[in-house]
Image (cartoon, rainbow, N blue to C red):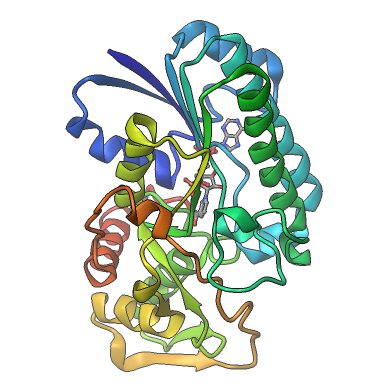
Length: 310
Ligand SMILES: NC(=O)c1ccc[n+]([C@@H]2O[C@H](COP(=O)([O-])OP(=O)(O)OC[C@H]3O[C@@H](n4cnc5c(N)ncnc54)[C@H](OP(=O)(O)O)[C@@H]3O)[C@@H](O)[C@H]2O)c1
């Protein structure tokens, strides 16, 4: 039986793994959050490995946030993430963990690049200035895993998800990613019977993956993948505009008649298209259509409003 330790177990992706773990009866999953161990402390991290003696590790824990949090907390985004990643990877090595799957993000790719981005392009130029602290800390995680592979033959791999959404997200109105922030905004607008106002034109394009789909793909990576680094994303053809997503959210709330766009706000990057052909060459995965995923995410938020992170 594999003992799989999931760091960041209380978060969006960690809870996605919890929701699908019953499909993997030969694995025992252990979930930890910052309330159990502060992984920016080496002492805490060592204690966690001694306690659980994992054979496998899925490393999700990170200081994560949207544009605003990334721009205003650069020291924390850099230092906390560097420390967390350094400690977890080193302890995986010292505890003879058989396999580590560590989580990166498509938002750490070079700012100036051609599209679609693929696994070979991660270090080809500086990231966008707005999230450089987070991005460089994450890029170092990839370098650290590569170094362990090369020096010690460790089976330490990285996965690169695109934008994720689903139950248990962070719904903070300023710090959150676009889908949870829009869900919370639409909830408030409907409660107060005021327009649901979206910042920007809604024209930018994104690939969104449902958290439980990503969870299954991360476990597939743990069990079957041999690539050192792999993008986990819906295909390019499933890229949608933010406007389309806002309309789906408004429709889920039955509030689509009252959606407005405030174009005085800037749009951010127009697109960040990722190429999932490496993944598609290895597994024929049926992704949850975004229309269904948004309905499930909205329903979860409504039913769990009191406990949702916001
Ligand atoms: N969300 C996205 O759209 C997205 C996109 C691409 C990649 N990713 C990556 O996917 C991974 C999971 O993201 P997520 O969205 O699930 O994040 P999340 O919901 O914000 O959860 C973050 C997790 O990390 C834990 N954590 C934070 N600081 C910690 C510390 N010092 N010590 C121990 N644990 C700590 C949190 O614990 P507490 O709950 O106790 O704070 C929580 O369990 C991250 O590596 C992220 O970079 C996310």
